[in-house]
Image (cartoon, rainbow over all chains, first blue to last red; front, side, top):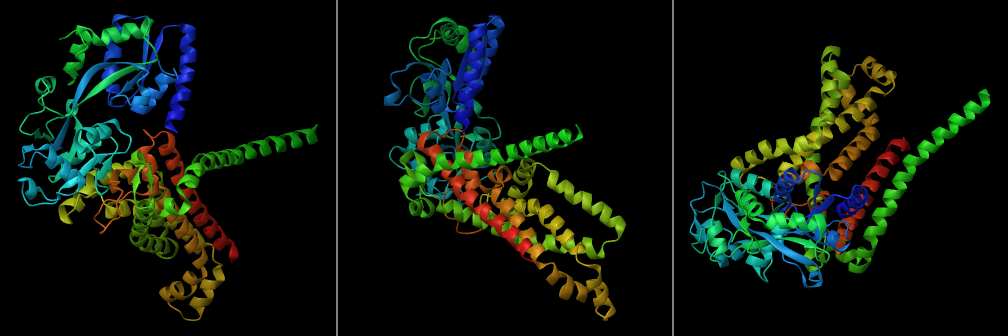
Length: 265
Length: 281
């Protein structure tokens, strides 16, 4: 439904834009959306006569929108699937995925297979991983979310997240729950972690930008801009800005890890 | 000329009335055409009684959600109905006019609070209370039941009160004249006489509980497993649609429409029953 609405909206907007000739529509992953908004805002200050519209909808919707050209740029927070590889894509930044617990939880570190066993439901008590004796309250994201599919791909492998896990539909509500529940565990984007929750180390390695860039921290995913064919005109100029030193600095200030494609490295 | 005006306005009203009806028809057709292909593919039995919901792997079973809807609604009924019935008896029979003038608008106000506000209050108040005093993650059947019980109060109270007040005056006069006490009159005369209206009120209230989405998403936890206790998180059919529609595409989206069909049929049956009961008498 939302995709339909999105498509209709976007086709309406692109119809308008064709008349004025200077709006680029960027749609897709809600994980990428807030960062794209920051970029667009800055870009529009620098180029006052051009317009960038940022819309949500989810990674899959964004990729579809790029394919059907109802958006100029699709945002994705997952790698492209094989059938989507025909699109032109570029990594604009990387995002870390962190496991978060309540600050009252004494645990500091989990191994990858411990996390997997917690999320498959094999480990159900904190004492089994070196914490205090209490039931683990599992929190996951909903089916179809980019964060969930990144987590499934990076952590779960072939295993499945237990259906007993609580499901929330945004990074924010996962964080709010973990902040209020001493026995909860959840996963969110690194850029969004604040003082109310504690980010766990993975195999003894802290989730920091450096550790993600040098590949020692394993849980990271690409943020992609996807277009149909080589970008041109305003679309190209916006993507170039995103990859420029300035754009990359903006993104890292917001908590993302700069792209290897960017001019920052 | 006068005749023409009459005719003309009649036509306009008819047209507008039809537009409301056609919207209903459009929505119904849309939901069914979107959802039926998936039900046909998976099979009605597998869809309704399937235990596993995992759209990314092509499993579409909504049984845990049907159980979720039933358990949350039942909980709301157990908590909400006694309060609502007692409240409406009090308003119709006992309350002095001044008190009634405070109660009635207050209850109507309860119906006017947006559901997201109920949900927000539930997350910040009910959920931590359950977590701290009863254990579990707090997001649970119980939390959903409490919120829904409050949300269905206005519906049940107002319809029940109206039903009691609409009973013929001489029923009560006769009973009192025969020497029955006020409570005996209510218990043995008014309540039985108002039975069909009360049952209809309850069914309409529960229909609201089955269909409520936003407040429920926020407090029930949305886990797709069969609950073992009332402190376990569940997912209802409405929250399944609400929580996953943002990212769903293709078959997954069809499956959400199919969930909507099941929900649609349940609500239709409930409303039809309520109408049948009120008309029968």
